[in-house]
Every structure is written in structure tokens, then in C-alpha cells.
Amino acid sequence: QQQVKQSPQSLIVQKGGISIINCAYENTAFDYFPWYQQFPGKGPALLIAIRPDVSEKKEGRFTISFNKSAKQFSLHIMDSQPGDSATYFCAARSSGGFQKLVFGTGTRLLVSP
Amino acid sequence: GAGVSQSPSNKVTEKGKDVELRCDPISGHTALYWYRQSLGQGLEFLIYFQGNSAPDKSGLPSDRFSAERTGGSVSTLTIQRTQQEDSAVYLCASSLGLIGRSSTDTQYFGPGTRLTVL
Image (tube, rainbow over all chains, first blue to last red; front, side, top):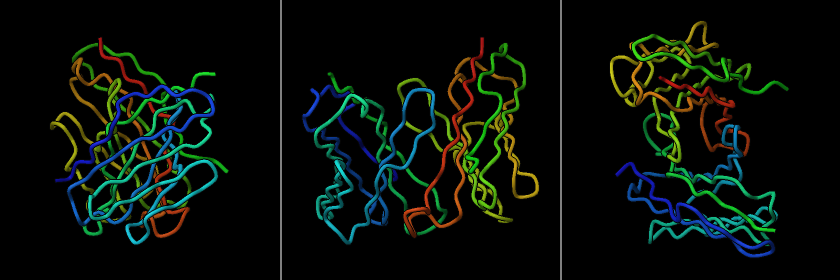
């Protein structure tokens, strides 16, 4: 129940296209859902995050869509660029207990020129 | 400002040896986390320190793994009698405390230590 399932494992998108990464969870106590971006040789860095009281959050070309009833959330990257090529992790935090994040298994995105 | 730093960046060791990995969190961050990232895998939570509270060790995979945090700052992750399956990137992160309270209340990750056990 502490898991966050992420798909796809890898994704190839043409420059200018839309990249979509999906995550699903079971634990209804999760109350904060961040996405992290990781470039090779670097640690993950926060990209965008959402709380379950809103259905969508947009920051520039990055949008999180959140479906509370389905317990699913997704990251959309509009006008994908080669510089977006990285591994993306979704995560979730439980409202109770320790302040730790449960991470998805990651999606390796390659944006072709 | 300085971010989370980790040392060494790479460590190659022989099976059965002990290793120590160091993490210097962002100054003032009360929470510190260790994760393990195996090739092509997600982030596996290992241990979490918050202030002076007892650490959450629920993610440590075996009693060969231990961690300490001295003076509420620097942390050392120790792996005793290393095995080949311990080969991975070990990531450290720190945060101010409550995650998600604001846009800056998040985990800041270091670059990791790549451990290779021969």
C-alpha cells in the first residue's frame, strides 16, 4: 500500500511533442505528490508538485494532472525539448508518520531532435 | 549557496570490506535522508533523521547497514562486509523539515556516491 506505480519505464518523444508519464497509488493517506527530474550523474531535483485538493498544476511547459478518485496523477511535458531528456520520478508523502517520500521506479525520457 | 555534498563520488571496494559514505547536508536542514538507487531502478529509502528524534531505520536492508548523524549535521552511512548486491548509487538528501509545506520544503539531493563492490 506504500507503493507508487509508475509507467512507462522508458519513453521516446520527438522534439515538440508531448511527454506523458503516469503514476498510481493505493494509500489514501498520501497528501503531497512531487515529481523529480534526474540528469545522469546528478541527484534528483524537484520539478513540480501538487496537493490532492487541486486537479491540475501548471508551471511553464510542465503540468501535473491529478485524479483523486482514481488515485492517479500524471506529468505532462508540452513542447518537449532534447534538454528534457532525463529520468523522471513521481513520489508521494503520507500525511502521518515520518516525512519521507515514496518514489516510483522512474521513467527514462529521451527527446529526439 | 552550497547544496548537499557527498563523498567520495566513487568508491570501489572488495567484497567483505567495510565502507563509509559521507553526507554534508544543507546548513540548517534538520532532516536528512539516505536512499539507494540501483541501476535502472527507483529510489529505495534507507534511513531518515529528523532533529534529535530517533531515526527511522525501517528501510535498512540488513544489519550490515548503519548510519549516524553527528551534531545534527554530517551523516555517515556505513556498510559492513560489503556484498556485490550492495553495488549502487547511494543518495543523500536533506530538507528543512516538513515536506510540501511550501515550494521550498522539499528534499534536496546530493550527487550521490557510486559504490562498486568487486
